[in-house]
Length: 140
Image (cartoon, rainbow, N blue to C red):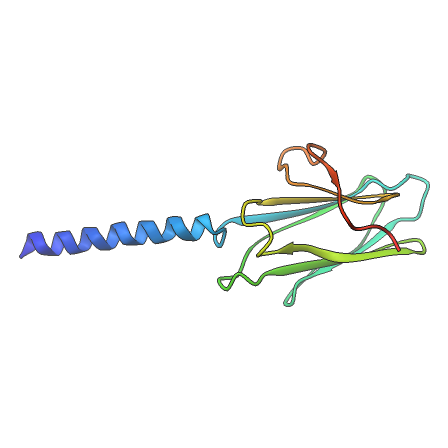
């Protein structure tokens, strides 16, 4: 009888560990990091940034040239986490989603860089300039 109980217990432990692994693989427990960098010209207007999800405002601030803002979070259990940002630079503006749980199952870090010609994006957690690519988001 004790042997049967141990086998059942062991089976539950293995199942639990497998489920934890699967949840981590789908990024539900992974922490995501968003960084926004202001690389606009030094002598130009500051960048005003508003970023939020459905539940939280994470940024409502002005970034001077060379400044950055960052936040970290975990996706919700439903996989519906979404963050968007609105940017204003002088008379120009732009607005777009910076994180959608459906997009980035493999990336924990998302870097956005504001420049004169629009926004750039990378995924490198150590150096945001590594593999920096022009995104489809421009100023309007």
